[in-house]
Length: 492
Length: 122
Image 1: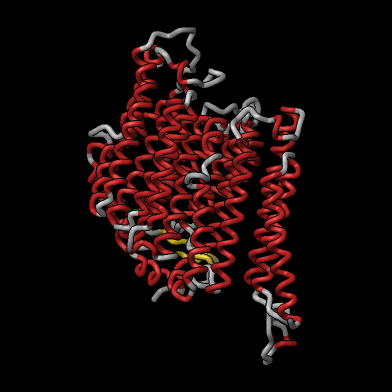
Image 2 (image 1 turned 180 degrees about the horizontal axis):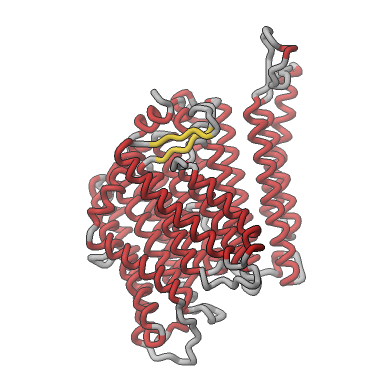
């Protein structure tokens, strides 16, 4: 069997629907098979990432029709980086959830089916070269995310999921409207083909389509004021799913947005003011809201929105340095926020309200988990020498190149707030005496292994940033080089 | 106004009316079922708009058959029709998930009015 990018979409989709069947053979297969699938996808990542470094962008047409007519998958350094990140974290989340989910009650069947569907969708959004196909995959991601939000019956999951569904449907409506208007103008759905014909579109139409796209993808990318779904969805969904939201759903949304801005519209030559403004507003409001939160997962959700604001602002800079910083923050955020969600879940596992105030003295009871959480908090707030620090430094350098003083001041201010609220949690865990009987759950071995792997990766990026920077640099080049993408996909 | 413009006006007008009407229902209605109906109406409007974009006046079905062989025939654009099929299926899926969530909420709260379902901030 030849390894190709199509495996990222086809294999998890196939396995997701095989799970209920194999569960008839043996209940345990329902949770072993997803792990094997994700492990295989990680192998595909390693293989294709080495190949893409040698040969350049891999464009694979599906169904035998070539690029402008048929649907094609594009495995470029950029999409490869994000897809590898998503499948990698998907595998760790599987490892973490392995004993979390009860096999006997069939819970694990539903859980792993939805998890694989979500990963299929997110991979598809990132790999596809066809704008309508992107919409379809976005819907696959979103529908499985709704279902996962409502996974626990005893929580307010259904309410959060309905809210998410409402906003998500509006997003898909806007997206479809934008795609249609674009199709009516240029008569093609292939992204490279659209990009090459973009100058035929009148500027008024261009702005309309752009705003519709921005609204549609902004909802998935947690951009203000379209992020009302995020805090509730993160809070009510199962803990590890919070990690998947932060690393897959949101990343797919941000990627789609960046692709549209840079490749489709070619706005990347100069700073895109609207992205910078929306990014700054998003991160300021989110970080101040995070400071006010009393529930742990809500705080993490707002922190996640804040980081996405930073990413959107960094993309808005439009320069290669800005794109590099944005991608670096995305990689760091996916890894570190996953670690925070995975470790935080165990600390508030049995608590009903999941308040930060209930964490008093947790470090004595769960020393390892608390230490990992504290490490993650330091890393994401940007303490030197951890990886969050490096990405923020690159962001500040990129902003300084464009002489955006206000942006730099805002980022520093927001980072201070971020440090404050993460320290609030660390302070309670380490220096407060427990007021009542602590309720928590000891992490299982699998969960510990997955948390340690994440920690090791974060530490590796912290101390040897050069090893990943090569990949991120190639990815940034890929996004900025619009003509290269068009020519390669259309075989010119 | 000739017939062609009139058809265009009618179809586009209906589509936009459906989209706006559905959006209005989603944003203002207090009952969960009505919100879901609003979503479906909006979907229908979008699908109609898609079809309208692909429509050519007096176009025939885009099928290659012996009857049209060797002749110049106006055909409607087949791509939007394919997209609409996909969009209908997606809309169906979303509606199904939405309704299952409504059922769950009804069992939990014994009401469908969103004023009474306020465990989370709206």
